[in-house]
Structure formats: C-alpha cells, structure tokens
Length: 184
Ligand SMILES: *[C@@H]1O[C@H](CO)[C@@H](O)[C@H](O)[C@H]1NC(C)=O
Ligand SMILES: *[C@@H]1O[C@H](CO)[C@@H](O)[C@H](O)[C@H]1NC(C)=O
Ligand SMILES: *[C@@H]1O[C@H](CO)[C@@H](O)[C@H](O)[C@H]1NC(C)=O
Ligand SMILES: *[C@@H]1O[C@H](CO)[C@@H](O)[C@H](O)[C@H]1NC(C)=O
Ligand SMILES: *[C@@H]1O[C@H](CO)[C@@H](O)[C@H](O)[C@H]1NC(C)=O
Image 1 (cartoon, rainbow, N blue to C red):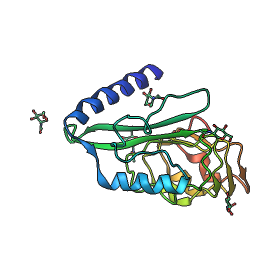
Image 2 (cartoon, helix red, strand yellow):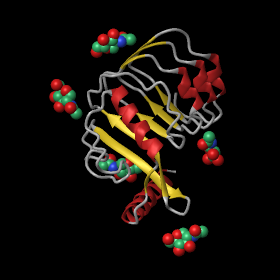
Image 3 (tube, rainbow, N blue to C red):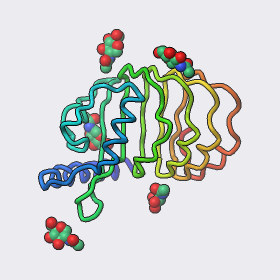
C-alpha cells in the first residue's frame, strides 16, 4: 500500500513536471478556489505568479519535523492537458483563520491536512459534499462546535482525524457507517 502510494506519487511528479513544460496549467476555477481557501485559512505565502501545480517554492517547500507545505496535483486528465488539485497539506504554519465553507471548486481533492494550526470556528457541514475526500486531518487546532453528521456522506473517507480541538456534542452515529474508514 505504502509502496504503491510512493510509486503513484512519483508518477504524479514526473508527469506534472513534464506537462508543465508543455504548457498545461491548473484550471482557472481551481486557482480561484485556492485563492479563496488561502484567504479563509489565513495562508499568506502562496505565490500565484507560479502555477499552483508547479511544485515550485511556496507550493511545495522542504518539510521539517512538524512543518509541511505541499499542494499536489494530478495531471493525468485529458491526455495530460489538465491539472486538478488532489492534496493540500499545510501543517504547523500558524494559520489562524477558519475552515473554508466548502471545497466544491476542488472536485478532485482527496486529502486535506491542516494539522497543528490555530484555525477556529466550526467544521462546515458542506464538507460532506466533497465525496472525493479520502483523508481529512484537522488535528491540533481551535475548532469548536459539533462534528457535522454530513461527513458520513464521504463514502471514500479512510481517515478522519479531529483530535485536540475544542469540539463538543456527541459523535454522529452515522459516522459508524463510513464504509472505508480505517482511522477515526
Ligand atoms: C509533497 O507531496 C507529494 C505527494 O504526496 C510527495 O510525493 C512529496 O514528497 C511531498 N514533498 C515534500 C517536500 O513534502
Ligand atoms: C495525447 O497527446 C500526445 C502528445 O501531445 C499526442 O501525440 C496524442 O495524439 C494525444 N492523444 C489524444 C487521444 O489526444
Ligand atoms: C509560528 O509561530 C512561532 C512563534 O511565533 C514561530 O516560532 C514559528 O516560526 C512560526 N512558524 C511559521 C511556519 O511561521
Ligand atoms: C476566531 O479567532 C478570532 C481571533 O483570532 C476571533 O476574532 C473570532 O471571534 C474567533 N471565532 C470563533 C468562532 O471563536
Ligand atoms: C471513490 O473511490 C472509488 C474507488 O477508488 C472511485 O472509483 C470513485 O471515483 C471515488 N469517488 C469519488 C467521488 O471520487
């Protein structure tokens, strides 16, 4: 499984680097979505002068023990002419905004990891519409309110990590029906 992920990851990178030089870029509505998401989270470093899929500095930086800054795209769509954002990982960046109200304009997003920031506010029920999500981590933030039962619509979710926040209420029973969950 890990090996497969590694291989797939390498294929993404190679194919993305190749197609970037052929002029493929991230679709405009996804660029706009990233701008809005960045603003909502309080993420200031993203440099939109380079394509978000370019793996250039500000989109992918060297990780340290806790800090991770990595936007990953898949470019295997339409004969390698279109990119889609599949992964956003922003760990330990002191982000102090709130969660974006929805992720609708990133329809291919599989993983969002905002571990160890200062994000506050609630988890929007609308995240439950992003059915492509496989992994969500909001570990170590200042989120409050209830866990939305709508997250139980994420049939492909394998990992939902919400610990170390200020969440309250009861666990929605529907989460027990997530068919692919491995880590909760
Ligand atoms: C960014 O994420 C991709 C996809 O998971 C991974 O292959 C790559 O090693 C990561 N880069 C850094 C610097 O963390
Ligand atoms: C895909 O792209 C390659 C290289 O640009 C081209 O040779 C090929 O004809 C394309 N295939 C389709 C189905 O468009
Ligand atoms: C977060 O804030 C701490 C304390 O001010 C600082 O030491 C650290 O470098 C900041 N991290 C980032 C990624 O800006
Ligand atoms: C989130 O934090 C900001 C200040 O950082 C504060 O103004 C705001 O009221 C907080 N929101 C919630 C819902 O706690
Ligand atoms: C869920 O995963 C399956 C199997 O990997 C995939 O075929 C399907 O497209 C995924 N659903 C969404 C909404 O991405």
